[in-house]
Amino acid sequence: MKRTLILHIGAHRTATSALQAYLHANFLNLQDKGFFYPYKVRRHLKMMNQIFNKKRAPADVAQDLNARADSKQNKTIHTIILSDEDVCMRRDLAPLATFRKWFDVKVVFTLRRQDTWLESWFFQNIKWQWNKKLSHCTFDEFLEMRKDFHWIHYDRYLQHLEKLFGQENIILNVHEKGQMKGGPIETFCDSVGLTDRNGFTAPAHMNESYSPAISEFMRCLPLDEAPDHYRGVLTTACARIDKKILGSQKKQSERLMPPDQRTAVMAEYEAGNRALAQRYFGRDDLFLEPLPAADAPLAKMELPADSYELMRSMVAPLISAIITQHVASEKSAQKADPGSQEKKPAETKT
Image (cartoon, helix red, strand yellow):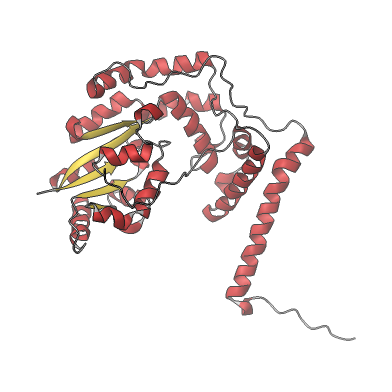
């Protein structure tokens, strides 16, 4: 009998990082319940890239997964879970459909309403800056490129998945509080049959968005030009600045679209959302939460107008964090190799 292979493909901004951390932290607990989250990594990005880049054949991966599951002594592994939200960005998932030869494949895809997803994805691209095209643009410029995000045309994208895997093998979750019993991680676990989670490590909050103020500051910084390790220093510094700002202010709105624009954006997805809701849930509305009220406050993507306040609250703390990190790195290098530091030359008398 084939094992079940759960392919969690996203979408982004639906607690994917927290879910991956939860599955990784409960590596052994999962096995007690017959589930296996392989390779001891939080996210299976590298493996998925190798499959799509044809550096690893699905047949070899399938053989390896089954061998690893078989090696779990005194454990009966019936389900293997792989998770990488970047998968949903790919237009053709045919390489993953090949796994149906060796597994009973189920695809889990979580849907977030397109307007709030776009706002959250805008902030995320500023935060991590992996795509120069999206890292420094304004929100209006970002919205003009929304057709590039083909995977949030949910009905169209699900039709592609259905052709490859069969509609009966697609598990859809909707990222709304009213449609997530217990929360997004609990909803995922319940949807794949992991209902007994006694003794599991509790989920953690991860990858939260920064405030609009610090996001605007980061949008103006060339973080994408820094090496990964150094970019991490800068991003961490910005996170600390953000906490300090939010410590003295009430939480800022993360909504960026005025009412007319939000209505127009959602109108683009209305027909597809309705078709998907009817096909999977037997109703007309895919998302049940109302749009924000017309008088709901919007995020202020702006820097302090006073130059001295900008220096005090953002620039100086960033420079201070860079200096602190540099000093710590030098001390660490000295401790690891005391002889690496050139000795100070002795003074000579004339």
